[in-house]
Image 1 (tube, rainbow over the protein chains, first blue to last red):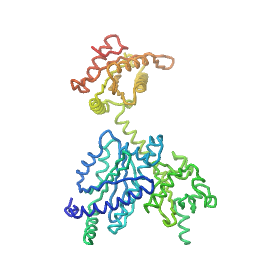
Image 2: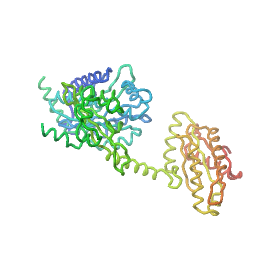
Image 3: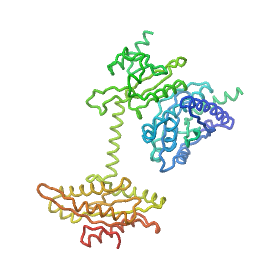
Image 4: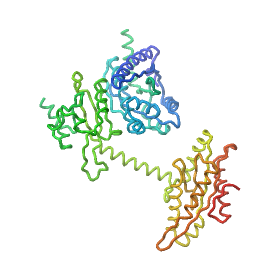
Length: 206
Length: 305
């Protein structure tokens, strides 16, 4: 990764703060829409190479566990992709939070709908807020979902999409329920450079 | 305003405008043509009252999501198939109803009004299902025996490695059953290869339909098959083998006015976990036991020397 696409400590702190504000908007939206209280952990920001991203995913996606993974493209100056990763057990618990009954929770199509909805709410709210804070406009493509049973084939298909990647990850945790999912925001070098410049403008203002 | 109306009624998508209580405020020409329902019949009516198959709770939530997040929410074709039932009149389509993606966007946030864009995704779904079918066929061609449609030896070798790892981790038994059709050469020589093939297919079907979903059967070549039975002790595997032996013994293959009796011999071995045995050794033991069954006079299950 080029030097210029790396975040320094000040930029990382600033981005973490902006993401915290953005996630606040997401949790408020979830509370409003489904009347449930969710918390989002403090975002962890990493800049990684393609190989490191593969290792990161390998560590995340445990064998013998099925995951629901959504992808949503972001267009605009800060372009890239979001990825929401959640295991089947958490997905089923989340579906119960969405008031699905026991039979519906066994139906993969119903579960996919829940995951698409929650990841869209989190993604659109968080990133729209972030875009507003750094004074840019973005739009989203409809999210896609897949059930990943074999993590090896997933990495193979995915890795070619990005040369260099920044990962902004956070856990979403619902109170009183065992639900934990991770939101990843992936962007290429050009978008990272745009973001760095925007962060530096924010830093100059304060 | 005039040009807006023109766009609204000439665009190649369905457009519905809804208030937060899901009452229809607008219904474009695209929908009128495809549903045969005129706007006068639906305006100011609740969409879920007019189309009772729509899940009201879910649609309300998605409308609310669009209004709260001020961003689009989606009714994806993948889980939902469609929002409004629209019949497909193509004789080439595998679908009776149009497959739809629906995007719900905020239209007037202050008055809590949203706009629904309906996209026809049927052609894309057709292509996807064709690709899925082609992919399944390719996987079958790679992993399965062309004649009998049970797994081939290559797949057995790959699968057995993973199954053994899992069995060791969960401290479970795993057993191998080697099967050989008795006097198969005589069947081929007497009745011809077509009848021989029929015998192979019949036995393969019997094996496949008498094991659990977690087990596999494969053709190792000629008239020899091997079953891998997960979480099965030697006794349990022997019971399964004996049951299958009896079914094959009771099966008659009819060729024209002739009836052909078939039998098979079985060798059963369980992986020895204590000696850290690999699958080749277990397989060799099952083969040796199968040889013994043949020596004893065939149509027999042997599980120890």
